Image (tube, rainbow, N blue to C red; front, side, top):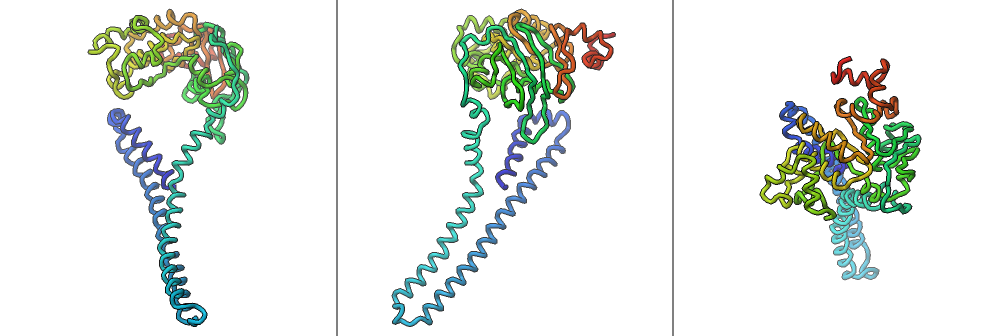
Length: 393
């Protein structure tokens, strides 16, 4: 329990270090201090209980060994030398004294190993009990050029994050045509991000299935599935290494193709300004770039991959309005033959989509062209649009 209760403390410290600027900006230092104190107290309680337990066991064992030594000593005194020789009596006393120290050390060591074995259990869980690894045991091969069209079909799809939690996607039934540009909107907790989790199979379905070009995604390997899809997250991940490595880690593209992708995302001038250009080293998680620039680098990476299915999680949320407008044009032109799913936190970014998917409590409540939905007086999309003050009715 002491090891288990220590993990939240470490996790909180890591989060605080990463978000220190935000915590200071919103004056939440006291909140996080109190939260850390609470977690630290829980860990300290388990730590003290563990050590008190060891101390109690040690005292009990000492008492037992004193009794055993006393019994052996009495036997040595009262047993006749004819029955047990003096040498054997001395040997018995010597062994009982050694047994006391050695067995106590052995038992306390076994208890410590049991307590610390949680790390080994976690490693074994990651190696053998992983849901992802189990899911890859039975896979069917697909063609190298799959998916050719980018048709996505959800068939009564249900998903929950853990066994004892409620479903976050509840019976999704929808069909997305090849090359469609779909905007995904909904209130907080409606299931927008869970849709991306389902598509990349970060969590296995509770029921139902997802078909891409007629192929059930649970029937193919995770590595094959995820290499065929591209995602541009709201908080993009960049790796320690060169700019080129982050854009093309498998060296499948020439420098000319990389520069062309950077030009389309308006990052060419920024990279040219670096001393070593494409060979410039990135800090941890791209710390030498702003969030907006990291999103544009992630967009450049998606352009190079040229996937048939692109998922955008508010990919331009952290860039200025002028660059946002230019990038939206780039997305429409560069991905015109790809199926693009845009998770929108700002409604105006999906007003040009072919259709809008409106989610509520993990269910599809509306799925139509934005102009059609705007005209419906009872439309949830229209109410979200009004609340965002994007257009005037």
